[in-house]
Length: 555
Ligand code: TEU
Ligand code: CA
Image 1: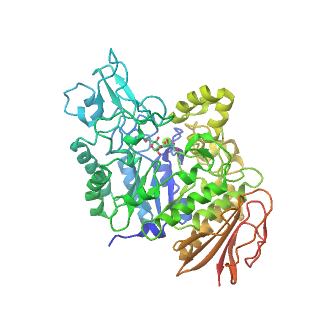
Image 2: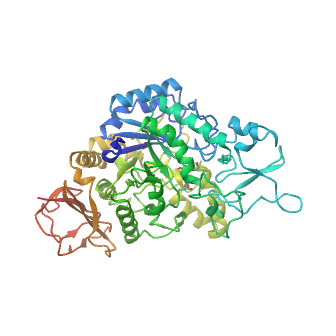
C-alpha cells in the first residue's frame, strides 16, 4: 500500500540561489540552508522541494543541467547535500529534488558529444534535423519556444538544427532513443539512494513528441504545442520511471503546463499512478489572458473560484490536488490577488487561509509565509531571468517600451527570486556580499526578524494555519462547495467530511463587503481562526472588512 504521507503534509519550496548565502559570494548555498533548518522546521512543514542544485551554466539558473549526478559547486559539495538531507530527516522533514529531464544544458557532456558529428553515438540523445528552404537555413518546423522565437537553433559545428522548447541553451532530450530513459532512470536511482524522498518533475508532460516533429497549426504562442504537450507516449515513459520510483515509494509532483482535469486523472488516478500528483496552472492565471502571464488583465475572483471548483470537484475521490499560489516562476500573490499596500498583512493572511482550507497538499514558496511582495523593478538591466528578457523584447514590439516595462515588472519571475528577506540589515541578512539579484527595498520592513517580533505577523499566522491543518483533518479532507459562486468579491465555501464541517469566508475587496449565506447553511458555526482580532464568534451574515477572512466550524 502506498504511503500517502503527502495528503496530510504541507510542503515548502526553496530556491537555493536566493535563500541564504553562507560564504559572502552573494549566491545562496547549502550551508546557508543548513543554517536555517530550525527556521524551516519552525514553520511546521513536512517536506522541502529544492529547485535544482545540480551543476549548471546558469542560463536558466539551474533548469539547464550540465551534470545530473552532482551538486552545483556554487551551492556547495555532495557532502554538504548529504548533511542537508540528514539534518532535515532528523527533523522529520522529507526532501524533494527538482527533476529536469525534458532538456539538459548545452554544456552537458551528452550534448557536447552529440553536436560533435552526425554519427556521434550521442547524436540521437537530442533532436537534430536539416534546415528547410533552398539553402537549408530555415528551421525544420514552425514550432516556437516557451521563451518565444523559434524552438530550433542552427549548429554550425554539425550543420543541422537542434530542438529546444525553452532557451537555445536547453536542448530537448530525444525520448525516441531508448538509451535516454535508461540514463534518466539511473539518475533517479542515484538520488533516491541518497535518501531523497521524491521529485518535482519539471515540464514532465512535454517528453512525448509526435514522430517526425510535424508543423503545428498557426498560433500566437507555443506554435506546435499540440505535438509535444501530453503526447501519446507519456504513460510509457512515466511507466519506465515508475519502475525505479515505486521501489522507493517515491513521491512525484509533475509540473504540467496547460493540463486539465481529465489529463491529470490520466496520470494520477489513485491505484494507477504514473505521477503522485500534478501542478496545474489555470488557477494562477486569474489575472492574465490564456494562461500567458505577460498578457496581464484585472484579477477576477469569479475566474479563480471557477478554476478551484473545477479541480476540487474533478479530482475528488479519484486523485489528489496540489495547492499553491507562488513558486519561483510566479510573481508574489500579494499584489496580484490581494492588496500589497495598506491591507498587505490582511491579504497575505487571507491567501494563506484559502491555501490551508482546500482539499489537497499546500505548497508554500520561500517568503510567502511572511507576506513578501514583488519588487517590480523597472530597470531591465536589474533582471537576470532569461524568460523576462526574452518576453520583454516581444512585449516592447507589441505594447511599446513603457507598457512593456509595466507588464514585465508585474509578472517577471525575478519578482519571486530576489533574496529572502531575513532582516532589515544590508542585503536583508541574505549575504555579506553583493547579492546576485537586487534585494527588495522593502526588506527593511518586511522580513523574518520583524515578523518573529510581531505577534500579529503573517508569519505567526501561517504557523497557526499549518498547526490547525495538522490538528484538524476537516481542513484537509472532504468535499468543497462554493456557497456564493456569483459574488465578485466574497469567496465563501463549505468543506464537509467525517472530520466535521467548515465554512470559510473571505473578502477579496479592499472595501467592506456584506454577504448573505444561502439558507441551507444552518447550525452553530463557531470561529476557529480569522485575520482580524474581533471577527464575530458565530457565523452569520455579516459585513467583512477589507481582506477579512474567517474559518468557522460546525459544533
Ligand atoms: O517552467 C515551465 C514553464 O512553463 C514556465 O517557465 C512558464 O513558462 C512560466 O514561467 C510559468 O508561467 C519550468 C521551470 O519551473 C522554469 O523555471 C524553467 O525555466 C522551465 O521549466 C524550463 O526548465
Ligand atoms: Ca554562497
